[in-house]
Image (cartoon, rainbow over all chains, first blue to last red; front, top):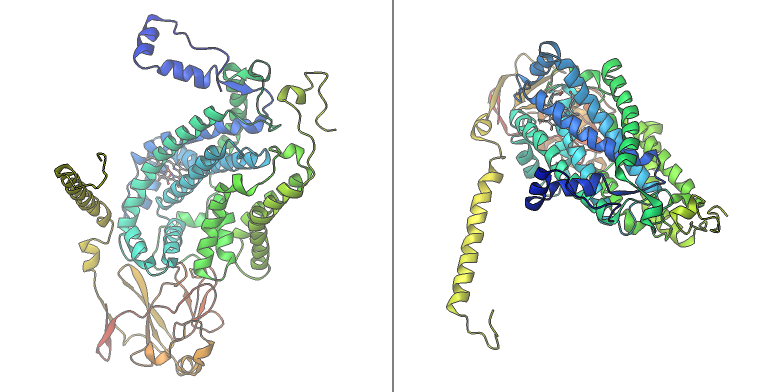
Amino acid sequence: MTGHSTYTPKSGFARWLERRLPILGFIHESFVAYPVPKNLNYLWTFGAILSFMLVAQIVTGIVLAMHYTPETTLAFDSIEHIMRDVNWGWALRYAHANGASMFFLAVYIHIFRGMYYGSYKEPREVLWILGVVIFMLMMATGFLGYVLPWGQMSFWAATVITNLFTAIPYVGNTITIWLLGGYSVDNATLNRFFALHYLLPFVIVAIVGLHVWALHVTGQNNPTGVEVKDIKKETVPFTPYATLKDAVGLVVFVGLFAWLTFFVPNYTGHPDNYIEANPLVTPPHIVPEWYFLPFYAILRAIPNKLVGVIALFASILIVAALPWLDTSKVRSGVYRPAFKKFYWVFVFVSVGLGYLGAQPAEGVYLIAARILMAYYFLHFLVVLPLLGKYEQTLPEPRSIAASLGEAATEEKPHA
Amino acid sequence: MSNATKAEPSRRDILFLATGAAATVAAGAAVWPLIAQMNPDASTLALASTELDISAIPEGQIVTVKWRGKPVFVRHRTKQEIEAAQNVPLAELPDPQADSARVQKAEWLVVVGVCTHLGCIPTGHEGEFHGWFCPCHGSTYDTSGRIRSGPAPSNLEVPDYAFLSDTKIKIG
Ligand code: HEM
Ligand code: FES
């Protein structure tokens, strides 16, 4: 979408630069003049919040890396050294560890926002798939980072996750030994995990760039799901309107982040990770970080190793297929009464799987996990395709302006 | 390339193909070290074997030794444990294997202590079959280290080992 104003450089230097590298104009078009639907709610501030968290993780991560040692006999001690000796080390480490949690909280809200308002639908499929790629890279980065403190949970998380690859028929063992650089998780593993943990966030930055590029080609979706028809009437310039609204959302979010970091810094962590890694003792209860729990529940719900691993990866990849699985012509959930109900069941199922992922995999927990997992896949493979065909939808407003009651003659959306 | 009606390969085509082939080989040769460097290095491969004096292990006890960074269980089995292991009908086993194929001397069971599901270390003398129980996702093994229930697909691996004498074994 093209915007409210076109950029005219004001200073002599800006004019000089603009003729050689039009970067100021690019920034202006993308983050100042860029037209934003004026009916966006606070769920649309999470993109900015996510960008902030990515930068926060990179900044705290780089300074932590100045004090951390990726060597099995020193790693655990270097974390304690950061916590006790390094100036502000405790704050930086707690900010990085809780920052990962907040980053995932934000990305989950962002994804569920997209699911409710149908933001993945034509023409935003590529935008959506890039988002799923970012999510997967975040999961990889979070996992690799969690191994670095070299506590018991670090070590056993690394063992269990790398062993997922042994499920691949014939070449599984060879691949796993290659990934580990040995026959078990050891120094070679820790060292390469650190290298990759440092690398992947920058890959994420690059993909975020593509994600925002795709966004700026199609324009933002909005709560009505109806495309902008009249840029003058239905959009406002990004700055100051979106910038400030994003700032308000960010302040509230950072408040929660600060509370976690300064008041309950170990709340989302696991006490066993303050015990140094011991390759000869598995802790009685292995649980991943909270943001992996739903997927962990799916892995454990299936009694067959290979099928369990396939289900785990399928549960993530299937999200990328949403644009083709949801067959409804109506984009926003606001005008889909039946979808709305299934949507909330799906949210409940996802959170429920998270709860079950933290429980022992036995008895009623296991049965519940199987039921919820089955529903998880049914939602994508059966509910969404059929709803699109049979659902009685409400009439969509003719335009964003109409939905806001601005053109008095238009019909009301909720007829 | 040109208006090929019945193309005689030209000198240029041959050069083009040859260069392309050479470039492909060169690219492969350049990528290979980048991939192969991740495989176990010489120092890891050198940690080949571990020796253990088993005379101090009383009947009924399991001793864990480290071999290639992994635990190996050396279990001095009791009479009942041996009988239990020998008397299971093979048809009942998810990964059928006779006990005799898994031991060199009936009293001594030597297995790699890594759950064949996702690599946790099972705890000894626990689970329904009193062999091992894996705390991670609940696989149970019998007194021959064979998988009996749970998500693990196969029996605990038997490493290469040899009795150097009646009281000494060498693993690896
Ligand atoms: C996508 C962004 C990132 C995420 C989600 C992330 C996540 C994590 C997590 C979950 C931990 C474990 C924290 C703990 O339990 O102590 C960690 C540790 C670590 N990360 Fe990151 N990280 C990110 C970016 C970075 C970057 C860019 C660097 C720069 C080199 C970095 C360097 C480190 C270091 C040195 C540690 C070990 C110190 C510690 O455990 O606190 N991280 N990371
Ligand atoms: S690792 Fe032993 S049951 Fe999963």
